[in-house]
Length: 127
Image (cartoon, rainbow, N blue to C red; front, side, top):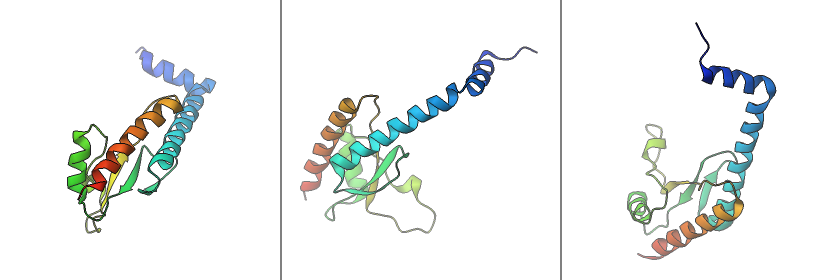
């Protein structure tokens, strides 16, 4: 039986170190995106990890997570309800997971997250 091309490439990448280099590049990019999120939305960041693809944003007291999720999605800001991330019986936080913008260049990620931050602040300021 012939080895599939994908398996062959994967095996070579593991053996020659390419896979490890790709993992390291991904970790660096995710950490950079997390840094940008903390820079532009720091006052709202409830929690995040350097290698996470999202950060939890605190929802202002006048808002509920579902309502702000709906409003932000209408502005094409990548958030989701906290419900899929909750453990049964846990208290529901008044926070939403914010998906860190993709991109290889800090300038692009920063611009996108700044636009998201403006949208989040504009919505948060409304009662």
